[in-house]
Length: 274
Image (tube, rainbow, N blue to C red; front, side, top):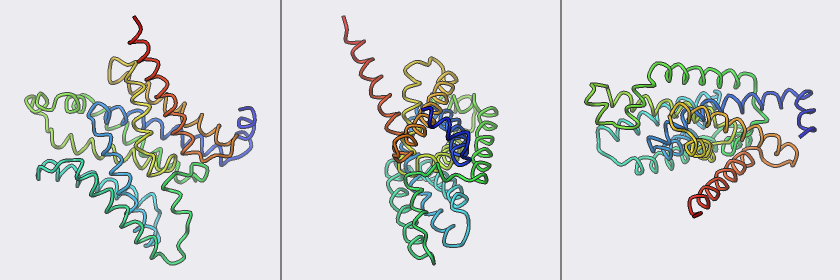
């Protein structure tokens, strides 16, 4: 750990990586809690894989991959939500369709890009050590948008997450709020891509929120705990991967998974004790 702290003071790329981890943890803690109580966690997995199509198209056209990811994530979230609301399709079927089609579309465009750069495929598993200042600005902007929407619509989103029928009886625009929630999930997916990659996004949304739920009695408390846990896992995984020369994204998820599994085991033994 002392070696990591010493390197952190001297290497800007590590400072950028740490900033990215903390920025990602904020969105992860807030939206992970919403998706946990609404039980739409796998939706994030569908969106995250669908964004590869947008990244591939952006790369093919000479644009920034993360901008393509942002556009594709929002479009995928809105399409999944609209089809679910108006065509009575099951979300799991939609997730599977967007998951596979998005991945296939991205691979096709990437393969046809002149001078195709293999480094683009690092977005599948994340490469937080390569975060640029411009990408940090984008991540900060996404966090600001998410926070602003939460401050403005938290009570409404709370009602939709816990009791849709009650929210409808109160006259709330349930369908619009549901679509808004999906768009916020999409923004969070883009936040997390650079840290853990498309493949592992769903784990970072799920695990901190799942642990926080064991100890929180309110959704706000769950968000705070999930954010702190996300920061702990991402920074701890970053330090551990630097010291052991392991992939950062995978190390972060393994650290979070180990913590979640250990706490589940401990709680199981505690409840089983006479």
